Length: 249
Image (cartoon, rainbow, N blue to C red):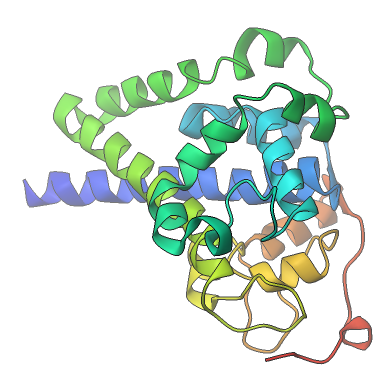
């Protein structure tokens, strides 16, 4: 039983990290901020991995996040802990996301440049189908009990711990390199593919690299560099030390 538990735990962790890297590299850096251009095959892989692990519809995620940048911690921000309260956003971030998407004008206004193809129309826009198939696959590999455990743990970690920590903790505690209301938390960055360096990101939203200072690590950056070497990605630009402003805290 212990061995089965450890296997299920490991598989769940891998699935969660697959979702994390798909989110940060494709949804965030590529689709939302155009900090990267990915080869179509690589982009498709990330789209599929996000769909099967989370069910996120890309243009919806892009729209909500772009609105967050427009109204960061001000009236209009979809999920600001400064407006809604820390614990509400930390544990209920997904519900603010869903609430925001009840207004169809959000996607039309903030994500009108996200083009849909046949894959979106027939597959990736059907958000509930992806995680359902993913859960079935886990049950086939691990057995029904451990498969459901792995899927449930993944959903909890991705939705209520990691993703919510970016909008909750990283707008509440941590340190700052730049004068904005987001914060950096190095541990969260390690767990979220670099997303925990949120103050850096808000300082330079179009930088494909989130780590700027000594001691900061952006786990997605080595992957992006490898894709670049293989001619499978083209970063918009990176930020060097000469371009950085002095730390504010």
